[in-house]
Length: 299
Image 1 (tube, rainbow, N blue to C red):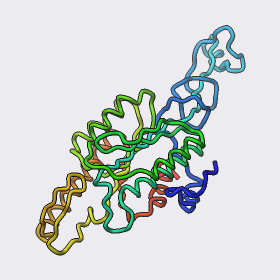
Image 2: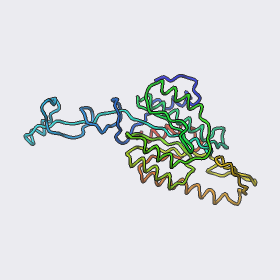
Image 3: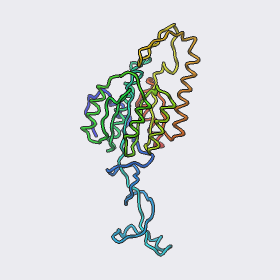
């Protein structure tokens, strides 16, 4: 696929880095186009699944004659079909995602680049992809489709995304988990500034409904290192509340809490078989993503 040029979040150098990479489902997915992902539906194709008894009308070419010799009964080989993958990209657009001190790239812009490149990969693979943006509510909710026209509209909509106010990550994820009826790959891009226990329960909700999940946990480097020196006023980008702090007094405690915040999500994701990718906006998104995809596919 050759996307139209000129979209803000589609950079040629990033697409060039991704040209030999793909995103393949680890579990089974439900789809309708023959592709590269294992399907729960049985047919006659590349990957052997199981035997079943021969029935009148079955193609004799699929009879397993070794089984005939051992059991004196006719069995045919069933195979797993290869199918397309349905991908839902969930982009947090709450006020906290508008933070960007270390570079000119805010967390929201960084997440938008990620969403654009991942969408491009999906469409190139003939998979379907949808985009949902949210803060306390769903702000954009595009269904999963695979056409170039749909992709172009997604890129246009992505350029109009603005940071919102407060967020409710957990409630939004529960709502979406209830709504996604067919199994899919859920890609969440967020700073996860919500109650970790509640968010983790929502992530388990997706897994309970047999969705595969990838979590991109995005920070600004200043949020990780707290490099501030002078007495300062910190403003909550979601509530507008401000607080006077002395960095020297709070730095050690703050960094310890941030590390524990990350460890909590990393541990919970590992237990739930969710891919957890922590990054900050100083890491080139295309480098981070290509490294992750190569690792995921065992390259």
